[in-house]
Length: 174
Image (cartoon, rainbow, N blue to C red; front, side):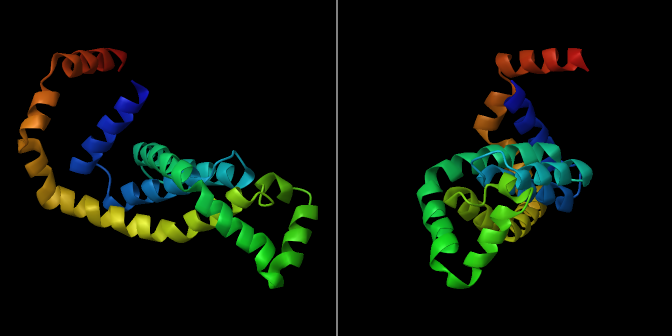
């Protein structure tokens, strides 16, 4: 029910609430955390930034989940890219060696090809996610939201007994 609550909150926020910048910021930062396969220092830093900045937490958790699934599927590509960065680029091999020998840097796990490849790809991909989500929120609020609410599937699901019972239980907790 935790994830159902996140999706429900995210849909509410798409309709109205926080600004498109806050929603897109949470979604983009969550995508960076979601792409990484391991808990590492840089992912902890991303979660701290999510908590410090005024971004949407539901969007961050949702994108963390979605991009975590996508990352699982494209891990072989992340490995190839990380291997290229660690081994095949001769100019930065000394940088990786000095980073590995630094006191806290091994906690980033950049010596792992998948971690390095996924983090660099997520960092490069995050502006696209940010601007795409920002545009999506604006379009959703302007035109798409009213169309979605008129869909028969949306009306059936929103009026189902299970959803109403869940909403009553959720409202009791508040």
